[in-house]
Length: 240
Figure 1 (cartoon, rainbow, N blue to C red):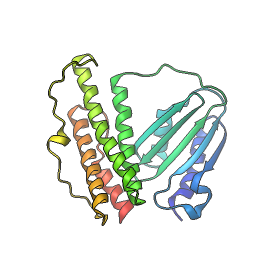
Figure 2: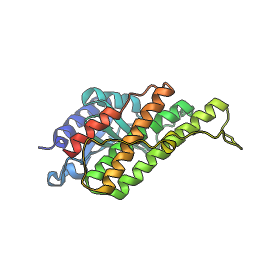
Figure 3: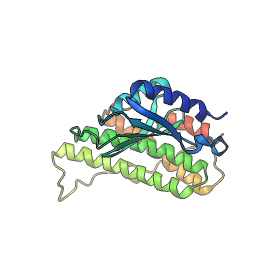
């Protein structure tokens, strides 16, 4: 039995204990196990009892305690729903959609640069996991698109840090900043051979980008765990 069946049951029980919900239902390939493969995620819809926004941090911490540390995630918010798409360090992926009965109560948003960077770092690592899934399903185009998005995020974070340092987001002139992964492209040794030149090239970009993100996090002392070793273990899990 693939991991999704038991994981779906555990997730449903976990969310029912920490979220005020009217109903929690499964969707996607979990409903038809013959369609499941190693790369499938668990889709779940949670119908909430009221319009109070969910505490996303609490949800993620509870999931990490129950399953495994969160590798990366992204949040997509609308007036009547919040979606959390996440991947764990063990390769498990969940797509959780929280639906409100009416427009949710709006809370003041944290617009600080540190919060923006936090969101970008988590999205970056989620994209890395999704790119591995696409490589596993032979979709080199989307995998490459995600890998290049990751490089854009690296540049975006560097721009935010520059804004912080200079106290402005208006720059008529730049400072001839270096972009490390462009100046000194790293030769990486992937733990597997995907038997496809394009797939191997995309995998090399992924590994290099995650390594570069680790370096940036260490350099600027951001409170995020390093992910290069976790990515290597995930690659082995998916492709051997």
